[in-house]
Image 1 (spheres, rainbow, N blue to C red):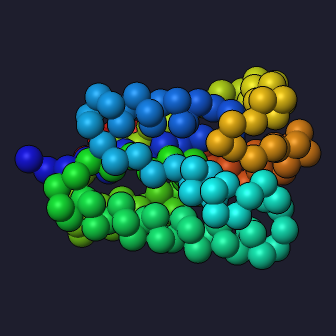
Image 2 (tube, one colour):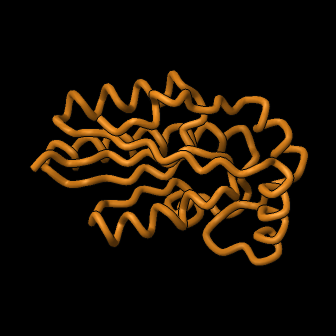
Amino acid sequence: MQPTFYLMCGLPGAGKTTCAREIEQEAPALRLTTDEWMLPLFGEQHSTPDLLKARDTMEALLLDLAVKALKLGVNVVLDYGVWSRAEREDFRSRAREAGASTCLIYLDVPLEELKARVAARNHNLQGSYPITAAEMDLWATWFENPDPEELIPD
């Protein structure tokens, strides 16, 4: 049977990790969540230039791991957010090359609700970094909503 590459799409606070954990159990699938690797390796100082570079490196390594798992026939949930169409297309292409199908799961939550969720999460951080309202406002300008055809599993 062909493995599936599940791509979690949405801004922080949308519920991506919660949904990814459900897929991990139900599919079953290997779940790859960047913060779960970054925090143990680098601690909680998340906004330094060196750490932002390390995050990019970590995400690239986890993507390579995802492709290897897909080639072995293992379902994978990538819990990154995949904010741009170009990134989503790149990940889909890699999945196809690995012999996997893809399923983009878009969690569309209004920005004010996201900011409220993140503010609440900031008071009880467990496995994630603090996020400010200003960061949320900025990131919302970077996020590219998926087109309807992106939501059709292949």
